[in-house]
Length: 340
Ligand code: AHG
Ligand code: MN
Ligand code: MN
Image (cartoon, helix red, strand yellow):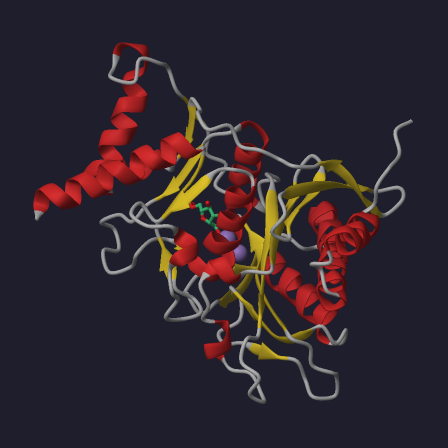
């Protein structure tokens, strides 16, 4: 049998060979991975663990919270509080940042997460996940505030997600490519199952919620119309469509076999730049996608160059196979230029 490399071994080797994973960051990643194992156990119990259904509350974005949204958030907060690797955390499910209580030592990292992504899929037993992003507190001033979090995505020290699907898989980047680890349930350990993941530059598969078509902007409509026209249209090839409605699962497919994922701005809520959240959904996924040779924009500019103005900021997302993302981005820029 081929030699099995555990997450710990992978991180130690990265630290030794490249010297770019400081001890605190290694601990942070291991703690997040351990928390994901605990979340996976709750997810797998389903109705038997009484974890399905709504919690009867709303988060800061006005979305109804599911029981698992809250459970996953608590698991991540508890796991990360005491290790001394963090200064503070931020989450989709918490209105404001959670500073590490002063009974514990404070570290230099900031952790952001979407504890449970794809909430609409929990009760129907379809893949869901956890997304996380790691920043460093750059200023040496005492204390920590929301301002410390407001850094562009290109400053991320690490990012990843865990997908709770037919397999539980942790996907990670520390800025040197993308690695995947599959959870071995019997051993309780993460085993390296893919390294140097690459997204093909071209694809014949797109992911978008088609039910929003009538609300889209013209360039999005143009791109999808051309895909739908298939062999007979300007693209000269047939396209396939997939939409899981869990960003983790859609991005996981793209990292595995290519494709383009879009959640663009649309006319339903014209004042919001998009549905997905910049700091704990779009940025970490963009980091992974770029590290795998793909591209990620808000339909006009690189997502990781956006300077966030607030923690729960939303953004339009176009990511995946480079040539398709470039095409969608070009369509938007062309339309902007002709409107001028
Ligand atoms: P969350 O469950 O964390 O709120 O995120 C759900 C997001 C994302 O995972 C997915 O791509 C998208 O919402 C699905 O939206 P629609 O239901 O509008 O298709
Ligand atoms: Mn989400
Ligand atoms: Mn969520």
